[in-house]
Amino acid sequence: MTLYVGITNDPIQCLEQHKLGAVFPYGPDKMVFLEERQDPIAAIEREKQLNRMSRLEKEVLINQQNPNWLSIPLLPVH
View 1 (spheres, helix red, strand yellow):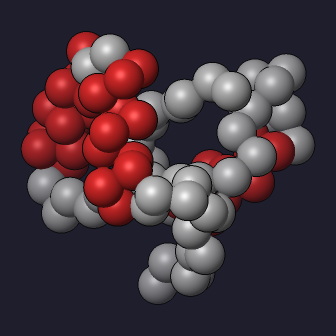
View 2 (tube, rainbow, N blue to C red; view 1 turned 90 degrees about the horizontal axis):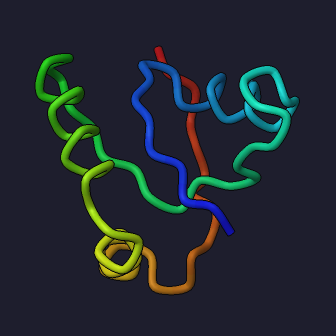
């Protein structure tokens, strides 16, 4: 399983686009970790930080928030 890191202002639409193959021919089938940032610059910096992490570091982060790696239910963005 590939771990994908990205930023978006609409997680629901982003996940749906990935599921439909609109972004990549393969894509995440569920979201298991989510962080919010109000400041776009802070979001970009956090994305860079996460992308520099090893797979093991990302797994530890996910396990802290979602130990069973269940799909996070997303609510529409207003």
